[in-house]
Amino acid sequence: MRIFLAGATGVIGIRLLPLMLANGHVVAAMTRTRAKLAGLQAAGVTPVLCDVFDQDALCAAVRDFRPDIVVHQVTDLPDRIDDLDEFLPRNNRVRSEGTRNLLAAAQAANSSAFVAQSIAWRTGPGTGPILDAHENSVIAAGGAVLRYGLLYGPETFFEKEAPPHPRVHVDDAARRTTPFLAARSGIFNITEDDTAT
Image 1 (cartoon, rainbow, N blue to C red):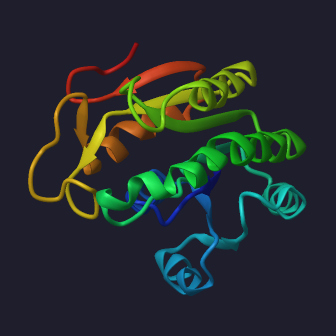
Image 2: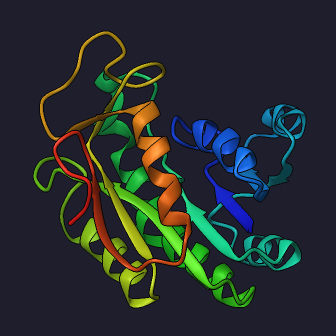
């Protein structure tokens, strides 16, 4: 299968890449950071430099690759949880404008499936109408929404201790994402407490 992975250098994306390659998929890995292109190429994928907010360039990149599936793992989050409030407007833009652009690109490329990340907790910062619209647009397009629990483990906000439920170890989150690369539609929880809803 040909997979276009947007957000390939995020905490889940970097773990998904080797799993996708091990399963024999051909992967285009998108990043907005030029310095990360060489590492993606060395990993054995087609590196794509693009910004999720540049709809024309994004549509062209996805059309050129001709993926069977587009996987949306893009976020705009800080390295430190203490800075989260400052980044929430940017992450909300990813969920609104970024999701619209990726869905348009998938449609332009005639991709048969679309998978997007979301969150399993439904209250607090980063939830509300924008998150609902993000999920609803993916479902309306026949895609799959993966609601991850709070991620913990290396390179997450919770490197040394597990957060409260709902939660999931970041390596487990990536491993449990791979079955959804088959064309499935719906909303699915990926937490320590759930396998699917």
